[in-house]
Image (cartoon, rainbow, N blue to C red; front, side, top):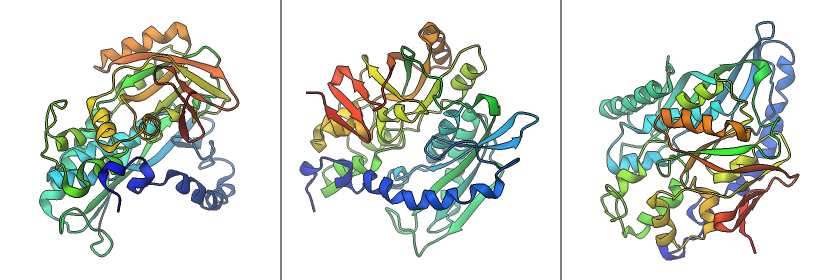
Length: 369
């Protein structure tokens, strides 16, 4: 086993995104074979696989589509177990789903949760429910039901009896004529970035490996760079961007693309239906948790930008003349917003981060030499 000083990549920590992508091809092809079952009318698929959410037709005459997505809080549930604090992890589950729905131009309306537990402890379920309720309140959605499963034989957590996993499946509505997946991006359109408050819900496997492998630090450790304990920092709930983004969608803005910055960082900007690349010429200071991970884990800057949001949790692409309006709406909802850069025509769909000397292409960032 590698020592913490030798951890340099997400793969070292146990997450192989390239292997996952390669393994997905067979699964995707099988799933696509179901599409002809609803080739026309209600249920017909409107988007290819690979965007943040999918869209199916509900009613063509009423121009009504249904956006759907599913996601989980990931291994952040282990931080909740280490902290013995479960009342915010539901916010993360809601956030990961509704933020993805926004990325096709949908307004989130509802979500179901799936809670798998090692043991159905009443306190555990009640605390998780508190977070789901708060996440739903922030996103203005309902949670009309869900499923709780006891899977003791297949689920183990940080502490005996407290293992759990939390996932959700969310839906939203939109006009079939107004699906947004970056198909109308033009050269010179600008990228506005909305602040994150830290790690959100991606890259926790690497963070846990860096801080806790070998017992060097605990969730109770303190660093002068952080306002609270390490565990409190890692457990900060993911920002929910619904209210500000829905207001942008309902305004007179010409929104070209909406991008949730999750795993793969700013490489998510390329998940659009056009031959678009980006030049990022400004980045705000990153929350201090990222420099701690990088320093303690001896992680390259290229790897950090591949794994983490680095301070930007969501991006909006609009014409340059509308940048100030987007920033004003975001700040009205207490989210800092920044003019990060601009779109360029690029068949290779590169993401150039000038302040850090990085070029992103495909699934990785490389040093710009």
